Image 1 (cartoon, rainbow, N blue to C red):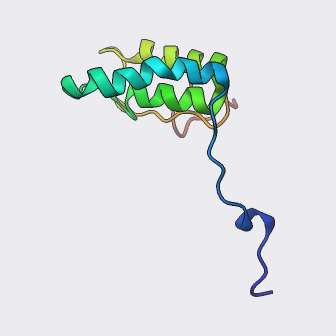
Image 2 (cartoon, rainbow, N blue to C red; image 1 turned 30 degrees about the vertical axis):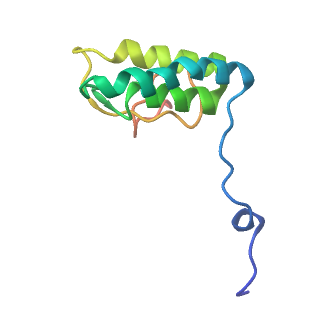
Length: 105
C-alpha cells in the first residue's frame, strides 16, 4: 500500500555513542587531531586516516575491541603494506578482513 511506512523507515539512523571508557580513550585522539595533526603534512597510507579509524572503532566497538582494531591498524601502517581503503568493520573479528574479502572458506 502506498503511504504506509515500516518501522525501519520511521526511525532516524541512530549514531553510535562511545562507552565511558572509550570516551576517555578518544581524548588523546581528539587532542592529536586538533593540536598536532594540522601542523603535519598528510601522510596516511590508508583511507580513512588512522586517527579517524581509531575514533570510529572506539565509538562503534567499545574500548577493548576498538583499541584492538586501532592498534592492529597502526601496526599495518608501514611500507610493507599496500595503501588503500580500509574501513572499520561492521562486525568485530580478530582476523583482518580486507574489503570484499570473506572470512568463510
